[in-house]
Length: 166
Image 1 (cartoon, helix red, strand yellow):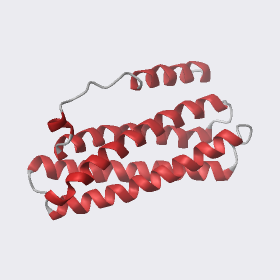
Image 2 (cartoon, rainbow, N blue to C red):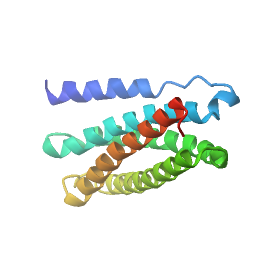
Image 3 (spheres, rainbow, N blue to C red):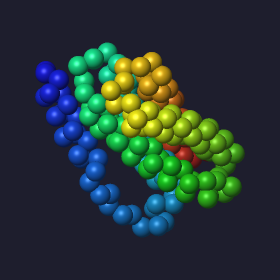
């Protein structure tokens, strides 16, 4: 597949993520199990974009626009997880100790991802002609590693919640 068709495919896929979410009632939105399910979906989405960004280091023919689209999608998933995490933290004291521990671990990893995403975007905005530099790819590699870790943390927390073992 040519690079142009590949980027077009990425852009088309990314457009689906921009569709507005259907608003759920407050009781469902603030339910730890529902929040963790949504976070699991967003964590998988973030992981996909982070892995894609990390793989861009292997293709020197990609333009800066490809990075921009993936960074935008990554930021969207991270922001959504941040909102869900805030809701989880408001009910955290009512949850079993194991789930409280999971939420703290998720919060730590999500903060690391947010910091790396901010650094990558800042670098991207100021250096679109130097995206080949190792410092930029270090941010992307960190995002990739952290997103894989976060996906596992959220999946385990959601599984505990579903099983009622929190």
